[in-house]
Image 1 (cartoon, rainbow, N blue to C red):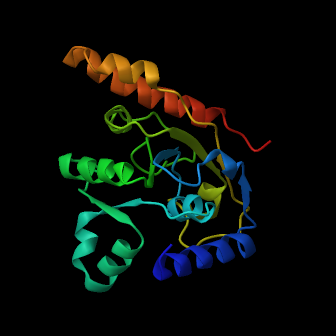
Image 2: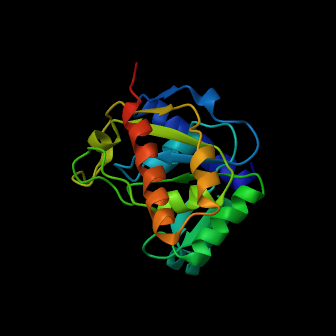
Length: 210
């Protein structure tokens, strides 16, 4: 971790420990080195740093590219390994940047639902994460956050001291679909992207606090 990332990482850990009384479950499922895709449900602005603060290695985040135009914010985002993406969170350039980080051995967090849940419940996955998974060879680790909607969901103005937790699942094996995608039709390829996304969301849904 560089100095800026470390200060942010440490600050968030202190906040999550003291204010939100956080729990981190099974972080050993995430490799300490090498590429990996973390796929998490999404209910709050505090989800990305929650997942990142739980790990003892720097993580790559996604951030809207227009935020990089502001000098101070842009510097912080760059130092925190943020990947610029367009407003919809995708685009060819964003995908290339994500794949480049994975090829460099980095770890990145993606939210298959595409946006924060409005009611705290897990939403259907968009196919975009399926494209990223198929284009890479990185292991995919399902992640589920708990309590963040109650702590700081869309309906809350200021964060509440509600207990939160993050659980890391075991890596999902996509060897079969990655192999099939090499020579299938375009129609089938789109189906594969959605199958990958649906399988990821099913594994996220299966994670619990026990």
